Image (cartoon, rainbow, N blue to C red; front, side):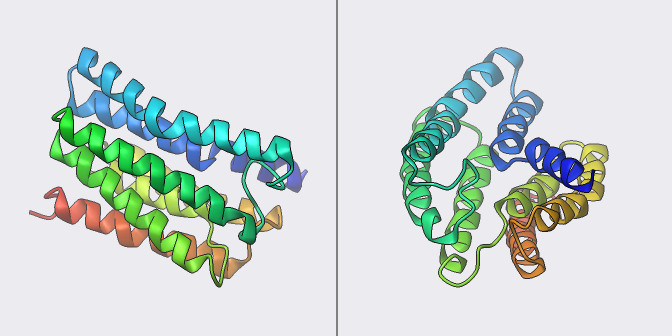
Length: 194
């Protein structure tokens, strides 16, 4: 029973699902509906959907053990595609005149991925924890209630990753610290503390 609950939590809190929902929610919060639909569709089409396709393809080929890329050594090629897609995304955001808060958010998310990439030489920091903690901070100025709810859920995400034996406590805490470090920067650079 415990394993089933942990699996459900891990799936619902998958980084690609959370980041997709956050992109849609944040664009609809700061832009008019038509612009938000176009912006979120473009961001998902440039960065998220290709990464999903990449992970499925690599898993199908047997180069990744699973869609989550749970083996530390296998993650390096995933980071290569993440950084490549991120450069294209930043170019799109800049040249399409998107609000600075979106560009800052994406740059800080890239920073989080860069930190996780560096940590990956020694420890497989949890991407589930990095993304959920980052989004928790990002939601704070948009909807404090949602931020608080996610903040309550974040420890359960860590528990789920440990229960599934995908991460150790050190890896969960490293992921959470990375998300918090970049999330606080997001709040600072977008004027939340002013």
